[in-house]
Length: 290
Image (cartoon, rainbow, N blue to C red; front, side):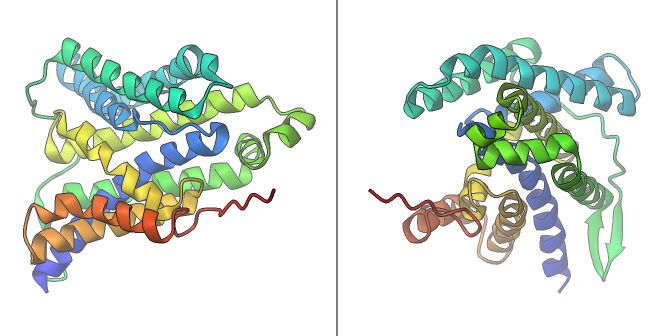
């Protein structure tokens, strides 16, 4: 029972961080039909920028985190304006290749600035063990899950209640109709990329607080793809539920069957879902009639 609780807490934590990263992925896809293969690198940049602000510049973690979010938002807007906007109207394979190239470029820039050796993250979340239902779990896991869950609830409120969030949903449903209502689609694209970068930066900081600062943070971002395929490329609730499911399945597989298989499991699920239900559990099935 103790092992089950430990695996569940770890799985929920990883799942919540995956959901944060997947949320940005889904936002970009819903608003602009772009599949962003550089989402893992946004996680990586968030981790390294927080490291620089807190460990290298000696800032308080609250200031460092705030500046990291600002940097991430600026990066998201810059990428949308200079890289993706010129690709509007181009074949989808060209856009995909651009995001793959962007992934390599961002990783290379990050490692050029900070090097590729793992670094100890300046932990700003308490990590001492606590007893929970008879199991020993780290406080950092509980804090990371709570923060990620709070961010997901905050973004859910933004999308359902705020003027900008409703405009983003309108663009996602029908760009032409949104244009006719006076909504700036280009502005919404910028909003989507900036929010995607900000959520990834927060997720990267939470992850680095647990595993340290290294390229493994970006590799963690690769698991976003099984999450969004499972939940549905265009479904925000699906991204959240998919993240939790993948996070739990990874930990249960690693804990009860063996390490190694848990790294492969998300991609086995991806293949299975694509074969059985290509639109995901909550994705919108598009039927074209000719």
